[in-house]
Length: 328
Image 1 (cartoon, helix red, strand yellow):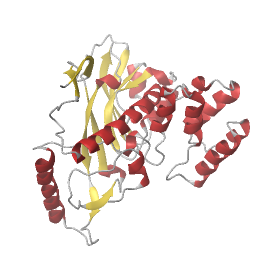
Image 2 (image 1 turned 45 degrees about the vertical axis):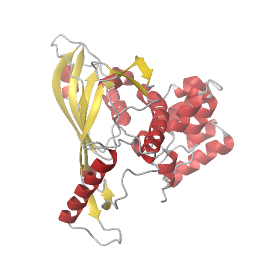
Image 3 (image 1 turned 90 degrees about the vertical axis):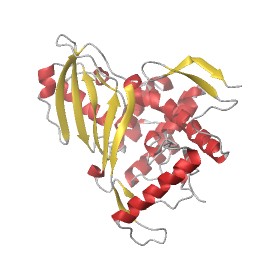
Image 4 (image 1 turned 180 degrees about the vertical axis):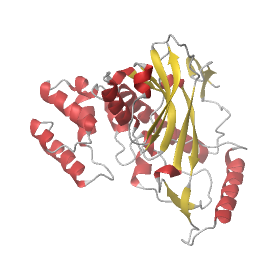
């Protein structure tokens, strides 16, 4: 069984069933992929400092949206809080907590952005508030293994067969929740590689990887910029050819030019959530590989066995690391 290069990099090298699947294409249209974030409730208070808004984005990368919103509101980027980073090519809905006047937020107009003001709060929101996502996904062009088109009825029948096989292989109503390409960078799985350098205290390597690592699918202008960095280093001339949409890379590059060798300061030019995601992405590769190994070894995915590390889930739905023990 062969796997594409991206799948191998991020640890997606196995299946839970031997079924053929339904083929098809995801995200053929932006509206084919809808994400509704599930987060912990916020306590609204009319005297609260922060504005709470439910915001629907169409084809917006979360961090880029926050950067633009901060500019419109004339506030620092780090005064906009949210729980999770969402897919760009999608219609996404999630809560944002914004350190700005409620009326000012309600007057913001941006293309493909819908803002619903919910009220005010004293609370911020962050990764710890994230509970999950509710997806509505359309797969187009479903086909049999020989390439012939499937009808909708045939596709749904195959889905039911896959579910039955999953019930048989991993347990009734269970699903191996592998972590997909978005966590790592779909066209350039760079986040985990940066995280690998950060945990080893190799900050220069982390910066150079983020700036110059080759992508699997990037356009010519971006490829040329990254090649220039690899061959010449982060020098001022690189600013002349950097594509304008590489905002994070530009800020990192400008920082290194201002303060050569201060690689930590350059990494800190990334938004806080993206800095954290580099570590989460590395953890996610470990998770994907561990899950695949567990299924391949015919071990249960929902029942602990000897050698597993188990712990208590707190009232926020997070693992209480201090309670973890090894199963004997």
